[in-house]
Image 1: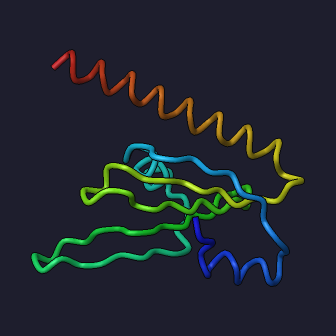
Image 2 (image 1 turned 135 degrees about the horizontal axis):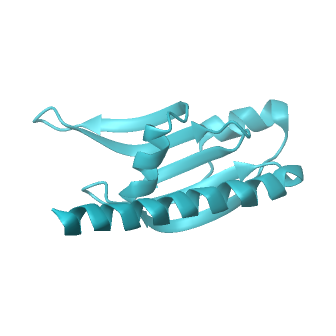
Image 3 (image 1 turned 30 degrees about the vertical axis):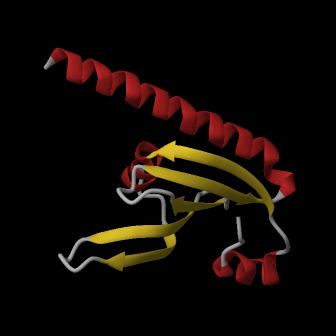
Length: 119
């Protein structure tokens, strides 16, 4: 995956980032970052003739100073890829962050399944 210009510009002052890739995840992760109000520092989108927006790329900056670069891989925004840019000295924090995200996604999936089954 090509490194976004936004990240290249940050690297000019902060130094080179390490990269961790996640491929093909569902919309839930994107929605989770939105719900947690993770600051969005870059977005690329286009507008359809009917006035609806489609996100192509998003970059979020976490409290731990990780940059989450998300790329839409489907026409209906249901499949995304994720690249996390981080400093090698923050690898332990990154592992904790990823475990928390994955746990939240599992919990949300279980809770949503229960809610749908109960209705």
